[in-house]
Length: 210
Image (cartoon, rainbow, N blue to C red; front, top):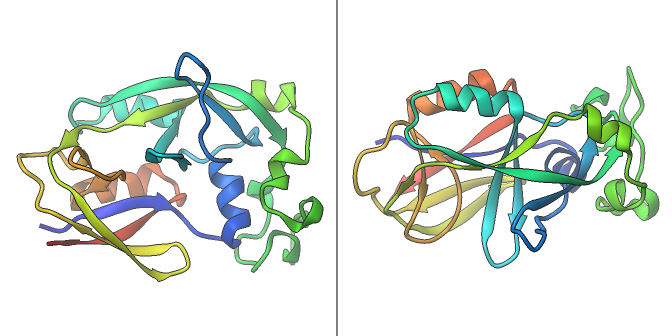
């Protein structure tokens, strides 16, 4: 069995992670995720982190509709709230540069206040215009399968190898562990689907079954 763990493609280190995925997850009293991120552009799939929980997967309205039409099993979605959306055209910057403001040809990137990645978001006021232009974002819950993430080994910057106990039962190309740990795992069929629909914004980490 060949499996992969989905992740955000890597560029600009922590700066790229903040721009692509937004800040860590916080929720309102009703449990809705409060988005704090750059807009109006958002990648088809984003990966953020919630304290004491782990990885949270988010998808745009466009990808949500494609996932609903795909045959990955029972998938669910929860709406999110556009709490703090700042207007940054980061998707136009040179992703081959080492840092956003090192962009060569094309649009020059910018350096956040104080040099801290979080200040891309926290250093600017909420933009109602960017929020209204941005697609709706949904929290994505994949079908669960009994297995456990034993550990994650860092190979290089934002590239890991995951060690997973054997999944118990059948899946339809996409699943999340229900026995501990977070992450979205796909087989070869699922990988091809996300490569196509992710439009270059989704990466894949190696998985070893233990």
